Image (cartoon, rainbow, N blue to C red):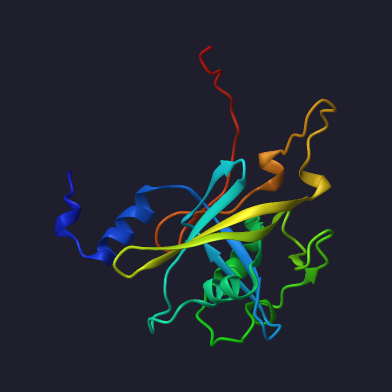
Length: 203
């Protein structure tokens, strides 16, 4: 089957892309409004894009009403965010925080999630996530006909749960199966890792 995207509506293209670009990592993003309410939302159009400076990028759409989502609004107001990597056990909570709430309502409270201090960073982090990136806003770029907000976040500090670290003394090793990261497929589907293997790169 060959599909010409020019024949599809944007919603059809979205469903095609999310079912074929798989699996996708999930950025579970905590922000703080100027009113002091924590917003937490998942985004699977997400990737690392540079190491110097250390940048992450995720794409944020609009609310069904056409309004800017709280994540974008908060980041533009405060310039600070925490990007989490959630585990399989948190799938229900991640999904619950995808709900559209009125500005000022907290997904953290709605999902009954516990936050803890993020050492060396001004925002807290979700307690049960094994990885969290404390970031400052680098840039927001609007793209597309809708448009989407591409949020570029510069990593300042990283939290790693000791339980996901390997025992090598010569370098830092994060054990992927111990992280057990939740990843996104199409529709309402998620996936997790079941094995890790290596293939030597050519010299």
